[in-house]
Structure formats: C-alpha cells, structure tokens
Image (cartoon, rainbow, N blue to C red; front, side, top):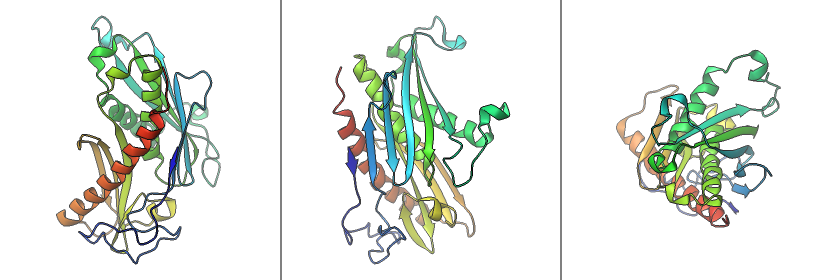
Length: 259
C-alpha cells in the first residue's frame, strides 16, 4: 500500500512557525508533508515476515525471522527477545561504500542504528509472552536518500508484525512503533527530510514514537545556532503529525496479512 503527499496548500500546523503554507520544498512538498510512502509486503519468499518500504527515493528491505532460541542471558527465563540489524548496501549511495563485513567490523553509525532498531521494536512486543523465541529484523538499505533509520524502524515494525500475525502470535504485539525526521532549514520547520535537506539542516531530529503517544527515542542536534524550547515543542508537534500518518500506512499494510 502507499500514501502520498497531501494536496498543495493542504493546511500545515499553525504553531511554532510550522504553518508556512506558502513554502515549497525542492520536491514540491509543503513543510508538513511526508515524502510518498509505499510499503510492499512479502518481498522475500523464505522470511517469516518481510516488506520493502520507500520513503521517497529511500528504499529499505526489512525481513523478520523467528527462531526457537534466545541469547544466553535469557535461557531458562521463559522470556523472548527482539533484535535488529542494519546495513547499507555498497551502492545505496552516490559513491560505492565498502561492505562492513569486508572490513571485519561494524562501524559506529551502523552499531548505533542497529541498537536503535532493536530498542524500538522491543518496546511494542510483550517479551514475557513470546516464550523462548528470538525475532530478528534485518534492515538492508537499497537506496539512501535521507531517513534510512526512520524507514528501517517503520518498515521493520511491519515485517515484525507480519511475522507474528502469520504464525498466530499477533497477541504479543502491544502497539505500533514508527519513526520520522524533522528539522529546521532557513527558519522553517520541515517534516521528513530527504538527503539534500538533512545535509544542510540547522536543526535535525529523529523521533521514534508509539501509537500510544509515547517516545522510544529522541535524537536532536543543532548544527549551527542552538534551538530553544519553543522550537523543540514545535518540532515534536510536527513529528507527531508524521507519525500519525505512518501508523495509518502501517495498519493498512498489516491488515492484508493472513495467518
């Protein structure tokens, strides 16, 4: 399934400088528009759950695997585990990058994002009811144009949910989780930054939240002038709008999964 941009002039949020209705971005979006989002389920034959998610030009392949084992520290405790991996394919970017497996070690950025994906997904699964099982969600970036970690978390949840539903374990899901970026460029608050925007943002935030209105993680940085509390609140309000639309897209995709 897919969702697109709202029509031009479709009403931004009129607070904190977000409602800049006349402001058009390079791709034609308004400040509070997501990039077109597309979620295609069942793209890997052998995975218990899989999807290809697109945030504009960014594409991430997400696959969930269910195994009857847990990490050593959880053995015999009757609880399960959810974890994630993240990798950017060599030509996901404009110039080829070396595979980290060829380097013999995982880079700091990759390790950080993997931990974030795992934390985000564990937050919406009742691990105590999962039994001694591990669900691993692998996120492989096919094309990177900004927001690869937010796409990985949003698509990773769909793959996770598809796997649990397919195997009759959907009762272990206790909510939805998604992620979106927000930022400030030239004083304008923008939702879902692509690479050209992210690379020049004055303030850049990644927001991971649940459909219950709680947050898993907030990652925010000022690249130039520090931002104040009012800007922070406005960015979170804008992120919440984007998260709401992503939850709708997730729900529509997951609704097609059958046991």
